[in-house]
Image (tube, rainbow, N blue to C red; front, side):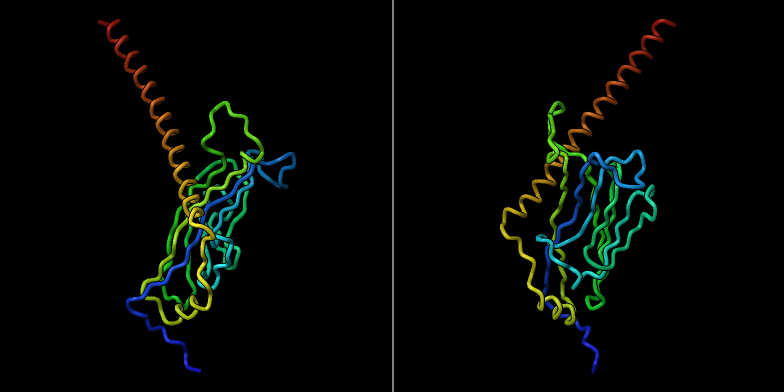
Length: 214
């Protein structure tokens, strides 16, 4: 049998929606075995279809780059589900590289996700329920193949496109990201204002000391 053509189809593009992000929950009364004492949460970072679809027909593997403090921080997941489950205590940026099946003849793409363990948007004195402490931080995106190979086009058209059940679902992902970004900005502003206050006190102390010496 002759090999399938790797020829590209001009003036055509094909796309698939994905979601990526993480879920997290604090430990209950029972801690995972062999868990470091400082760890407080279970978490899972993932790449999948919007409704949990298997994406392995066009994704060959996903490589997650965790914080260097983890053993084997570069995790290559070569079969679904494309996810990594760990325990931890701190939030950090996770690098995500998506590699496509050989038939696609496409370069890998890089994404980044800020691991979220703690809920945002609650007042400081709020009493949180167990449900409130369970975090779901998810982003929506679409992978677009411009001028796909004939092989990839055949593979993709054999599988129906992953459709969001309702348009509001996509907006929900967008709102989650927006709320997180607002919370991070507010926390950053508070931190900067605190540092400014400290600098003002140091300057005032320095000026007072100069006045005393004069």
